[in-house]
Image (cartoon, rainbow, N blue to C red; front, side):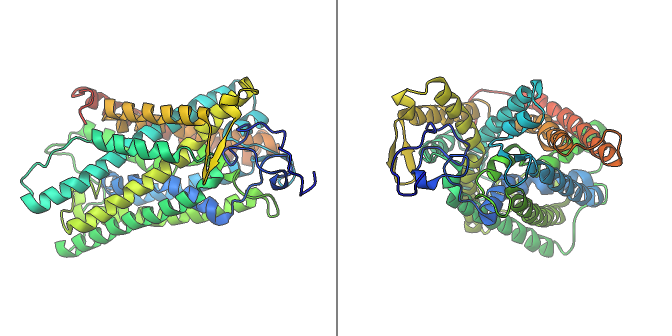
Length: 478
C-alpha cells in the first residue's frame, strides 16, 4: 500500500490489541496490517514498574515482620528470581514460530490459544480477567485510603493524635472513579505511555519517602528493631494466627511482583523488530524486576527495622509516622497519582477484549465503529458507554465491600500459579519442543509444582482473612 494513500485500512476499529484502539492512516501500519507500534525498552519498563510497584510496597514491612529478618528478605529474592525467569519464558511466546517474523500473539489468551489451545484458553481467560477486575477494585479502595489519609494527617496535626479523625472513604472512591472515566476514554495502551512514566515516577516518590522516614525512625530508635524469626507467639498472637499471617505474608511478597497477566499486552506495544520484541521485553523485565527488588528490600527492611513487630500494614496510611504531616501528604498524593496510572495499565486489556468481541459481533454498527478524535481521546458512543459503566461498577463494588482488599488477595493467590508460572512453563515447553523427561523438562515441572504449593498455602491464608472480615461486615461501611 503506498505511503501517500489516504484510504482507510480494512481492519475494523477496535479489532486490535491494547496498543491499537482505532484505525490509523495506511502509512502507519505494521507488517500484519495493524496500526504501527511505537513502544521502546523505556516505555515497556515504565509499564512494568507502574504495574508492579504498587502501593503494596508500603505493606512489605508488615510482611517481613511476620517472617523475620531471615525468611523475609530470602523470600523476596526467591520470588524476584522466579518472576523474572518465568517472564522471560512468557516473552518467548509472543510470536509463534520465528521470534522476529512469526505470527504475533496480541494478548495473553492469544499466546495460550496458539501454543496450548482447548479448554486451557477458557481457563486462562477466566483467571486473567477476574484478576484484572479484582485489581481495579482493589486500586479504587487503595486510592481512597490514601486520599482519606491526607485528610487525617492534617486533622492529627491540628487536633492531636488523640482525635480519631474519622471520615468516610466513599466520596474519595467516587472522585477516583470520575477521574478514571476520563482517562478510560484514551483508546489504547500505546497512547498511555506518558501516564505510565508519570506513575512510575510517583511510585519512586512515595517509596523514597517511606524509605527515608523508616531510616529516620530507625536512627531515632537508636538501633534496629525486629527479630530473626518475626512476630513471636504470645500476647495477642496465637500459634494459629502466626501460621496464617506467615502464609499471608509469603503470598503478599510473591504476588507483589506479579505482572505476567499483562506481560504479553505490554510486549505488544513494542515497535517492530529489529531487535525482536522478546529481546527488548527481556531487557525491560530485567531492569524492572531488579529496580523493584531493590525498592522492595529497602522499603520493607527499613520499615521493619523502624517498627519491628509493630510495623503497620501500610507505612504511610497506617500512621506509623505522624510528622512531618506535609511530607506524608506529598507521599499519599504520589500514591493516588500512581494508582490512576496503574488502574489504566490493568484495565486496558479488559477494554480491548470486550471491544474486539463487540467489533466482531456487530461489524457494521455505527454505535461501535464511528469515532471522533479529540486530542489523546478517540470518542465513540460504545467506548464511552461501556468503559464508563465498567468504572462505575468497580467503584460501586469497592464501596459495597470495603474489605475487598482481602478478596483481591485471594484472587491474587488463585491466579499467581496459573498466570505467572503454569502457562508460561507449558507454553515454553510446547513452543520449544522440550523433550519429556529431559533435565530441563523436569526442572520446569518442578518449579511449577513448587509454586502451586505456594499458591495454595497463600490462598488458605487469604481465605482465613476474608472469613475474619466477614464477621464484622457492613455494606458501604467505608
